[in-house]
Length: 396
Ligand code: SF4
Ligand code: SF4
Image 1 (cartoon, rainbow, N blue to C red):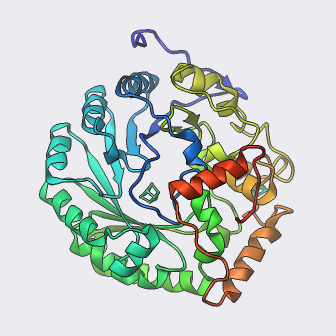
Image 2 (cartoon, rainbow, N blue to C red):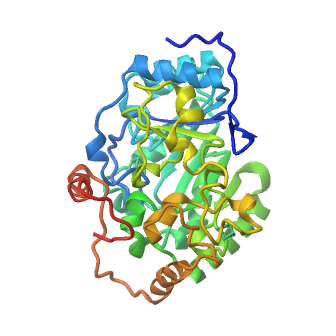
């Protein structure tokens, strides 16, 4: 067990003090009853099926809190598949974390909600795939829409603040008004309309999911109209897809600056999808202290600051704004994680993004390529393929 009374010296990187890992994501398991086509979990999750036990998670939480971590998300996979979830929430609250449960809702019974209330869980984020049963159930490859609707009512009956989350893409963007109506009717305080980011399973299904520019423009207009009508009663966050931007987003607010994710097997990750990057060994919390992981490990220092940058980022006067964008996107689209994120129109690889958008604008239904659901059999196939050598922007 870590001694919390030891004062912590905060090392520097490139002459700047490294801030504490304020935001933790505990991915308790990769197991999930749903099979979402846009899931950000690694496509080869079948190769990482081992899970930390309760004591290991608690030790991690204690160490991270001692470093200054404040906000904690319990995620997965589906975190409700862990029967120690309530115990972990209670421990996290005792340590002083603000806690959020990120769930599909499957398994969130009245009894478990009562136990989570007792454990003093702060917040619940419930995901829907769409406002219609047909599309929700198609995209998750399950019959779960009605159950999720019942769970939303139970969450409110237990008086939890609730965020409804819906990942947006080509299939459900035309329903955006109905998604907002649904969230409002369910009493959600917040609605997160996050356009799909193309990592993990979403990257595999990118050509099916990528929306057109017209779809996005119409969706934004609908969101604006609803914002005026609903006001603060349900706050709507609309996250624009970065493929349609000319500058990349400041990914995770900078590598090793705020975010520390722990995969089910204990691998420490500087972003949700970093596991897809080649040439990095991610330290494990069962072998290395959280302090050493955060301040000293190669994985967390590799893309910290700006010393690692190549041109055009190195001499770019905007480099402190976006820090060169997303390393995973740079890798997936250019096969080199140290390149500029090709969403940037200064990148020599920006044309690859334009090609994807061009294809999306021309695409007619139905698709030649079958959609790939996130499931164990498909994951084993990806794992088999990725074992000898990781590939970049390849479709199955
Ligand atoms: S996105 Fe879907 S499949 Fe992936 S973890 Fe969440 S609920 Fe499960
Ligand atoms: S060149 Fe690099 S640092 Fe400059 S705006 Fe583009 S991604 Fe950002």
